[in-house]
Image (cartoon, rainbow, N blue to C red; front, side, top):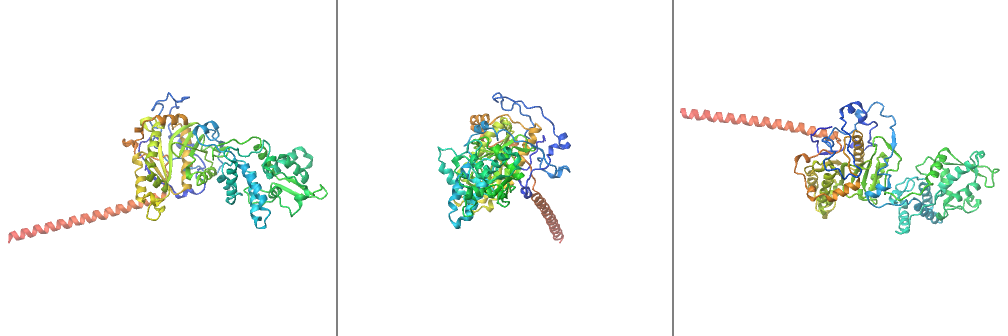
Length: 590
């Protein structure tokens, strides 16, 4: 924990780290051996505004020195590793606090879910008039059901098309609905306790009918259901079921609204939900329509969640953030903030990274960052860790346009602020994603031919990073990268719980200090102790280690053979010298 030895600066990530959820079932720090080994530092000094904290004040000598590998090894997990892990509330800061979200900066996005529902409902009405569009019509209705029962904000068409049941075939419709709203118009949202889809309104309608008439045993006629649905639908969404009951019973009439109810009755609606939600019973003597409807247990649970969700309007927020209300205790009160341009932005791979973070339950929020691609909050204070992620093409592009050195200078200035001044107890790291040799184009250059960056140029630039003060972790793809980030969040939480990490500044204080730091603080380090730093986490690649040991053995064998050859040649030379001396002696005698 307090050692000063430097670990290997460039490491590779094990292929097995991307298989499934990489988080462990028990935290390493919970085991007695690590509790006893870890020395508990004195409580950190805090300040309300942080202005009285001079550089170096309050920083302990062994806070940011490399320590043993982070708690990610399953070898030390106790036998009860299959036990369900305890959940704690999602970190409120910065992921859920609007004040700090605005402080970090960046655009806030409205919830577009209801805008998408209205657009797809209108699109379905147009599709039902052509026989060749029946499949597309059914898909559009299915998408409306999936969106109507989705209880999280969708702030972009890219996020909506990744939802199971929607798909990318309606991406153009979703995009046009956003552009049609205009910059000065607000995205459509139904009024409080109102709905934009018949599917959501139908479930809540049956729930309210149950509450109003308990003796009915949960079965209600089609007539009463239609009336209640119309009461719950927002009239602006143009989805009301205003026709007579006979219209919806006629097989020749295809109504996108009533078809949503049929989707909830079916158990094969290609939606990631535990359908059916509604049971339909035919009773000719019960009502004029002869149709009775009731909620299933799963439908009743969904209806309760929908009713609760409709009580408040969704405010504008970050493009993506962890939607869960609880997280695993492994992540504690740590939240990772990632730059909105990561992965090429929302139009490219950003949502792919966010989906993986969602599946792993990592607390994160997407904002516009001025320095680095990933920063980590402990409560509302910044942890002294800055991560920059680059693919092989990104490295080539940065070398071409000059961003490579400029970004490094900015990160070193930020390191000076977060790391306590000249001590620089802040880890700055590059995650290099992908193999440059596999991203070449015609002519052998990486990324694009006009960038004029060969594989050797890119590898040499990466290889010089440790001497410039950066640690490097290599990743083969986005799954590896998400695994690394999840482990870093877990590691920061572990160190925060053990009070072995210094976090003094909130984001506003951090950026103010970075702006006032002199340019010379961004120069490459000349002190050897600030070169070749250890990465935030240590992940050993067994394959690489085996190949390294094999290479070492081969090298040792080769050196042994070479030494034997040298000894043999030296012996031969000695024999030649001895023979020459004997010849000289014989000639002198003669």
